Image 1 (tube, rainbow, N blue to C red):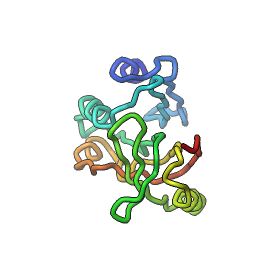
Image 2 (tube, rainbow, N blue to C red):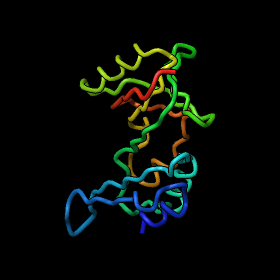
Image 3 (spheres, helix red, strand yellow):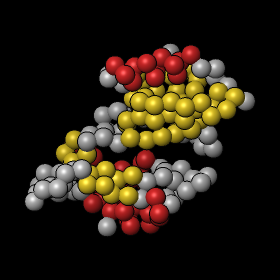
Amino acid sequence: MACDATARLYDVDEDSVVFQKLQKTDKYDQGVVTFRARKGKLIDLDKLHESIWATRLSGGTRSGLISLEVSAVGQVVTSEGKTVLKVAGSDTEFVLDRHSDLKHKVVFGELQKLSSKAVVKVAGLIDNYQGRWPGVLSRKLQKPRRILVTDLGTLEIQ
């Protein structure tokens, strides 16, 4: 059901929406929902947040969100002492920061060494977007959102 709703509501490839259960129990199962935007489209995280809010108003579900991992393509610039990803094809920006995990700190160091002309694909976790429903949804969303970088790929040099 969540997979069909995701494909209908957003610019998402219908065949890319996958729900994978991580545990099989009689109660709440943990799982991962994975999807990708259609070619040339972006997924608006504000709309995604609103949709989750519309379906998770009850505080009695005992379910929640462990993490929201995103991938974005764009140019990395330094602005006001912060490392910022300007997403290609939009006015969306993400503040990039190092993940607390040691293996991911190296990735952030590599990111800071890149030329500002490099087009990169950054993957990471949206900071402070985890917890039980509806608590996680009632928090004020930080703008621009902060990505804790877990992976990096250079696509091309302009």
